[in-house]
Amino acid sequence: KNEVEQSPQNLTAQEGEFITINCSYSVGISALHWLQQHPGGGIVSLFMLSSGKKKHGRLIATINIQEKHSSLHITASHPRDSAVYICAVEGNDMRFGAGTRLTVKP
Amino acid sequence: KAGVTQTPRYLIKTRGQQVTLSCSPISGHRSVSWYQQTPGQGLQFLFEYFSETQRNKGNFPGRFSGRQFSNSRSEMNVSTLELGDSALYLCASSLGTGGPYEQYFGPGTRLTVT
Image 1 (cartoon, one colour):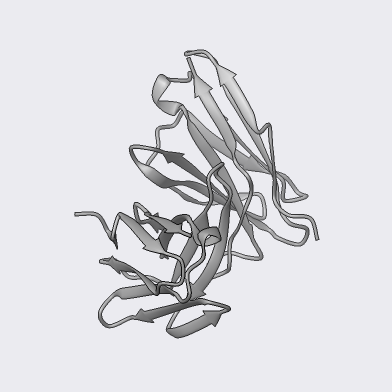
Image 2 (cartoon, helix red, strand yellow):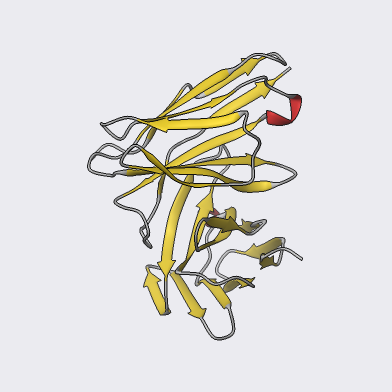
């Protein structure tokens, strides 16, 4: 079993829909990161969480340390949100989920 | 402030050769981490350097090595290349180590081994 599990693997949504991506982990962590990767490879850090909830524009990330679970929400999704979203947990090193490929159709 | 830069962006090598990739962190960042991304294994941690010292190493063979210079620039080297080393190699910089610190990723070097 992978130490970092993401779901779903693939997600297709219509523009304007509310989207949730989930991440569960089984190791002790100091922080959890949500990353966005567009075609071509560039990775952008969206959030770094140690507890609670963070919001940036239409993106919201939450983490429940006791349940070892985090969610990334996108409100009012837009085609430009189409990308791979990767959950990463930071302990002694960084462990990554397999990613969620999101496609938002106009 | 300039972002993380990686050179070269693309590289084609043949089996058995060796390769050196370079990463220049954001000014003021002292930690550089390297990652390998392949379609089969996803993103995997290679190693982290802070103040010219390797702080952590992932589960990769000794053919993978790295170093960091006094200006925080980092290089990674892969010797005796194998076909399976074909991947996107990403580096990320952050302010410190033992964090957590936000990581800023470079554009990556796409290595193809033939």
